[in-house]
Length: 433
Image (cartoon, rainbow, N blue to C red; front, side, top):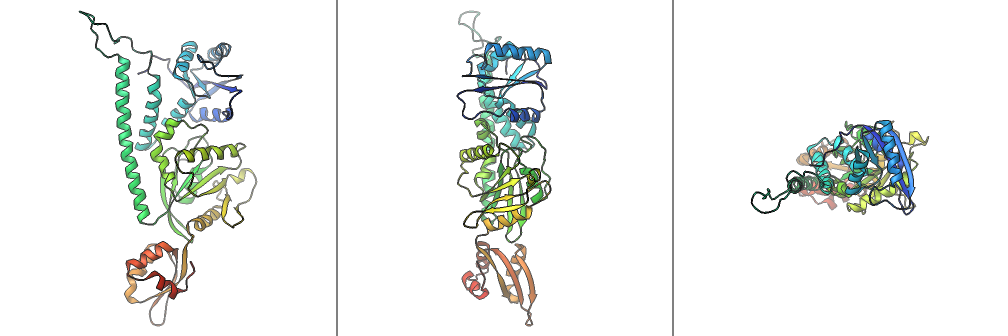
C-alpha cells in the first residue's frame, strides 16, 4: 500500500534532537532501550540542537548530510528518530537517505507488533498500525490514476491510492467492531466478579518496572518476563488468595511510557479499561531508576487519560536489591499504608504487600467464632467454600464451633442466603468488624 521502499533491516542510525522550547524532552537512553527492545542494532547515534524543527526534514540540511554519511559508512538499513515525524517529513527523509525512516511512534508500534500474543492483542496492534498508516498513504501507485473523460481516455474512476484508503477504512471499521465485542465480554466478566464480590487489583506502572515479575511471584503464574521495554503487552488475570482477606483477581497490564502515542491509548482502551474498572491499583515503581519521579508523573498522565485517576492506589517500590534497601511499609499520619519497598526478583517484602492488600481491601472484616448446629451444615459448607474458616472444633453437644475471618459484605451475603439476620448473628458472635 505504500510507495516502494528499500528493504528494512536491523542496523540502525539513531537521531535525537533537543529543541529549546521543549518542556518535556525525550530521554536518549530510553530511546536506545526501545531500539534494542525492537531487535535493532544501533550502529551510530546522532544528536544536535535546534530552535525548532525543520518543516521539510525535521532536522537541518547539514544534519541530513551527516545522517546520510553515517548510513553509508555503517551500511545502515533504517534511521530511527526519537520524535514524532509528519508523513511528509518521513517521505522526504527516505527520499534523501535512500533507506527506511521510522519515528518514535512507528518504533513503539513495531515493538507492540512483536510482543502481541493473544488474538485481542494482535487486533489492537493492527488497529493502531492501520490508523498510523492511514496518514502515510501518498505518492504511490501512478498506474491507475483517474483519467480524463472522452473516447479512449476514460479510466477506472478510482486511483489505487483511493482504493487503498477505502480498504483501509473498511479494515479499521471491522477491527473496531470486533474490539467492541471484546470490550463487552470484558464488561460481562467484570460484572460477574462484582456479583461474586471478588475485588480486582491491577498492576500499573512505567514499562520495565518489574510488574510481570511481581505478578508471577504473587500468583505463581508464568507470564513472560524480560529486562526490556514492553515485555508485557497482553493483559493477564489470575485469581489469588490473600491471607486475612480472601480471594482477589490480580491483573497484569501493559507498561506506560513517556508520550505514549494516542493511537495506542485508543487501540488499547479495552485492555486499559481493566485498570480503569479496578477496585485498587498497585503502582509498581523502579526505585533504582534515576528518572523514577518523571516516570511516576508519566503514569499519572496515562491514568488520567483512561479515567483511572480517582481509583485508590498503593505504591510498590520495586528492585530494592539494586539500591541496598530493606523491605518496609511507609504509612501516612493516619496510619494508612502508602508505599511498600520490595524486591520481586528475590521475594523480599512480598508478605508486606499481602498485608497492605488485606488492609486496603478489607476495611470491614468480620473475625470471630460462630456456633452452628446440625441443621446449618449448608452454611458451614459455604464458609469452607469461601476459604474463610480459620479453625474449627466441636463442643460436647456435637455442635460446630468455627472461627471465621471474611469481609463483612461476604458475611452478610452468606447469612442472608440462609435467611439469617447478619446483625443478630454478629451480636451473638461478639465479632469485631
